[in-house]
Image (cartoon, rainbow, N blue to C red; front, top):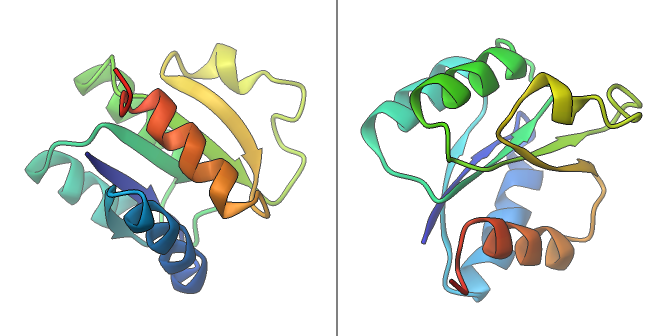
Length: 121
């Protein structure tokens, strides 16, 4: 199983990738919109973890591309702000499966990625 982590903080992305690797899940990492789009176009993914607060580019543009090109690809959104805290992200993007705070426990994120990515299917 391969997942895409779109996160501007390389230390946080590495932490998440390490926890995923412990469960046998490989992760590609992108720091911004451009890199995420390139990886999406060249690799197959079972799920995407997408930080809404990217330093480069727009996370919602990445999410829109995913919804258009890969309508069954689940997205787990993470953020450090209260944006979309009302759950409206699920109305904005049909691929949204979870909305999590950036400080989510890595083990919880790993479990959700594996569940929505179909690891146990």
